[in-house]
Length: 215
Length: 219
Figure 1 (tube, each protein chain N blue to C red):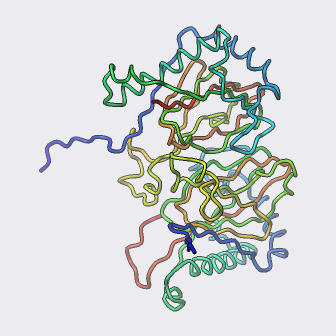
Figure 2: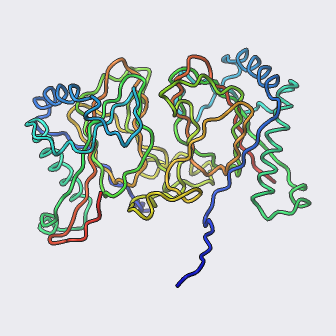
């Protein structure tokens, strides 16, 4: 008779989450700046996916902008990535301090019925999404504007019975869906496929995304 | 001379359904009339922009549904057999099981990405599709995700491989009267319908059993 069994997550995917305290002022400054620059000059000239009229994607140089609000956000987001790397890896702090972090960073402005197809980010190790403005929550549309991460265990849920259909976190099969809140950042490995569900709010949803790699 | 062959290929079949032009109007009228609470799948979240019926469509006695069932199973079996190493007689000895539902993707609606459990093959049939807007190439498409073979290393010589070696998502534009057949394990979605009309689909999970097989798992 087994008296005790220890269960550990194998092949686990690390997700980091942090919140920027008192983010309202910063987010309103960012929002005003991004909306003012929702122009052809700042639009990503080489999008990797079919562009949508409802979704504006900026160039990938956001964190090189000199504006104080952008630099403040840069500090928070990249620090969140760095802390996630430290927490999730066996790197010693001294070793990680010697690494140089590089990033591509951009913003998205999503309007009614805007979405983003599932993708991942080759040639990067860590990605993050920060929420500047969550956008209107619509009753009866719980998936509106949600950030959805696809299960990395492709095919694992092909056979389901009563003993694996209701696995608890972190073992459950299926998509992980996050409805971002303002000031929240999610850090995840760049290999994880993710998408943005159609946003049905009447205002705008604004996020900042970054891909990081280290040398 | 270099010979290149596709390894780890995914079968994806598209076929017209015979008699669809006559069948689809009756089918569309029936499905629209039954897009109600009684026929909605209550195991799934209610979505005002996407109606999903219960997975009992193939048990309906209506003539239009019976005709569709026969046509879809025939077409799907032909596709599955074409992708199989089984001989025709071996394949004919198999028993086919199917569960089907109808889906109405309304304007600004979509079907979120999913895979199909407890089945080997999935069939998507288009009953009615609005014309695709010229500027919205992805409106209402069935998109199959290329997740399986994705690599995180990319360089100038692997990012733009030609079919069938490219690793991007595969897109199929539903056309009334056509069916698509693919493995149920492939993650897929129906992209946002950016027209002012409904997209009517029938989707069926399929699996096969050997003659006399008694240990078929429940759906």
